[in-house]
Length: 202
Image (cartoon, rainbow, N blue to C red; front, side):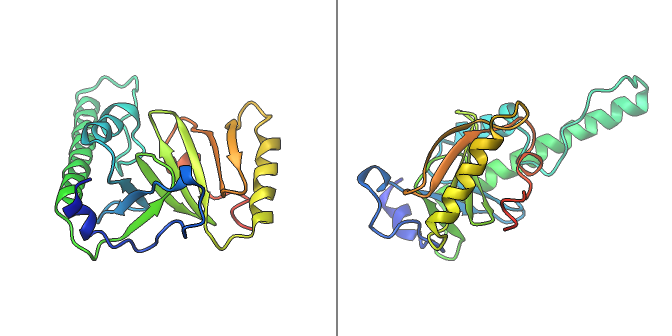
């Protein structure tokens, strides 16, 4: 990121208070764009990477449901499928264009959060943020600074037990002291794969 862009950024929430270990000193900025519910997009990511996520890797970011393959070969069904695909393309193009504008031409009033981990997208969830890295097929939860360490450890312990089941995402690594854990990213939309759980309702 160039110095002029960095000077424009006034994060709504800064992640880190100078007490992080040296390998956590790098922060990544995620911006909330208008008309894109819930999702924050990492400003440091390459535009081509975001395009790959939107069009080829996952449809989680689009409000348009990816058209399903069905056995109805009628003309009406064909037209309906074409319209669905066009809607998907338009929606993803809109996200990409708005991201480019915000990446290079944005002001100080935009909602930005800074997090110590990289991903293409993040969501604000109960007790913190979940950062999604589609390239590595992983999701990292970073806890808010005001969450008690014992609560973080309890959630990690519970996930260790849940991850033993075949249907659950595997817990890859974690660090309670640094307030994060990483797990496998399940297939499906972000909202469908990571809806509020019993852990989040505590």
